[in-house]
Length: 340
Image (cartoon, rainbow, N blue to C red):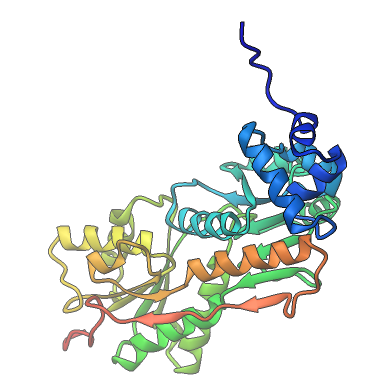
């Protein structure tokens, strides 16, 4: 019966006529091995269908060639999906692997920080849009891994982020410039430790309204506890004695649900109501939604590059990177109704 034993590094060394140590160096791309010898080793490895396991390689190099990402919420959400796709491609182009940790609930989050599964499983950890308590930040630093935070700035830590407050202020100012004064901010009710960028966006809205000297009575905060319920937002909107003429919504996902609910009862945009979202979701153009775009592909690419640089021991030129947002004008904003 034919021997089905997998080929070993010893087999490759015998076939190439070199030592096992030389095989190890050659397959790692070490400059200590001549090009001719490296080519002979690679050819022998290919002939024997030999592949170096990452575990074996890590014993020699101290590196796993793997970067982990910690995200909050569903992997199928627009932001998480776009970010992970870009991070994966950036790592793949560099011969690196991606390891994903997801927390959907407070319990899962507590479990992650209690066990720290990323320890010894990656060369660096990217923490994506995850609001952290002080004890959780301390636990992450106990990992002993380079850390890169996405959309969160921490003292002394590497980060890649947008300026949520500035973006929301620009979006609000757009509505003010159109002539709106009764502008409501629409957001989701979050767990205290999972607010992500919402608080900053609300602060930017308030900053722009204050700068425009809009009276407090014309500023309204609409908070819904149900992410998929645009009807709840529209119901709160219609119940106001002085109905807002425009909405700044904290995310495109919620904004599109609000638009759908408004359209179902006959409200027209922008004739009856102007709506601005935040993100530039893949479906925003289908809805004709005016939005503040955050370039998630740039966030992911910059975070991956920063994580790889830190994992290699290099000193990156910048440890805190701000990626600019852009106002994308579409069909859901216009001047307020003549009679308001």
